[in-house]
Amino acid sequence: MDLGLAGKVALVTGGSKGIGLGIVRRLIAEGARVANVNRSDAEGRALEREYADQGKDCFFIQGDLAEVEACRNAVEQTLKRFGRLDILVNNAGVNDGVGLDAGVDAFVDSLRRNLVHCYAMAHFALAALKKSRGTIVNIGSKVCETGQGGTSGYAASKGGMNGLTREWAVDLAPHGIRVNAVLPAETWTPLYEKCLAVMPDPVAAKAEMEQLIPLGRRLTTVEELANMVVFLASPCSSHTTGQIIFVDGGYTHLDRKCTAPSDVATFGAAAKEPL
Image 1 (cartoon, helix red, strand yellow):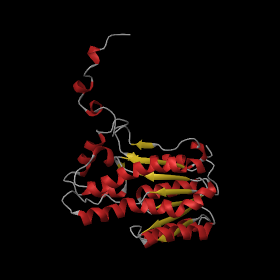
Image 2 (image 1 turned 135 degrees about the vertical axis):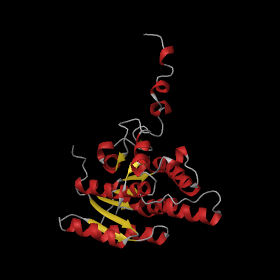
Image 3 (image 1 turned 90 degrees about the vertical axis):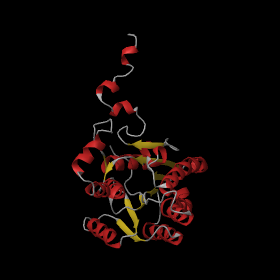
Image 4 (image 1 turned 180 degrees about the horizontal axis):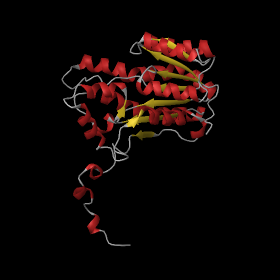
């Protein structure tokens, strides 16, 4: 399927690794030109060179998005390079473990790392997105729905992102701008692999987690998340806005019986009368 993204310009935050990298690669595969803003200079430059060698645009902008001026600069540099902006993907963020006992200053810093830059990026990109009747896709997390423990800042930020998705969808509908969110749960990324590596038995820990995911008993892939993000950014989803979509194999919302032993999983079935 042609998603109609050839020549479009996308700005992706945190696009040098993990889910962000998957999104960047999928956008470029669909013919989009991409600006990637990231803190790490080495990863961003390497990705830029990789695509330059193929004659494709993956323009790297170095910046710490916890600083508002870095957000402004990212938008300005994208417009200077490409002359337009069609897609904003707010992906950057970190589950930083700022819990309830961390204190107010640490909590506010977590919001800056995970939420404030989403507002700033959309604010600075607004005029260009109105001109292109573009799209915004926010990358959230199941943590804001389920809780995790010990990560108040991240959970609040991702919950706030859901709220902004709906709020912006209302605000921007008159301008033809669509806003949606994609929420991953247990996704196989380099960071996830790193976290598993410190477990006493990484293989067993991964297998245990996979059994909690009803669809396929496996982790979500970066490619599956990227496919949804790019679809929502494309004209193929032209009447979809204000949606919060979970790409998680049913992990977040399906009945816990889906992950239970077989005798519990069939609970209630015997009480059903035949049709």
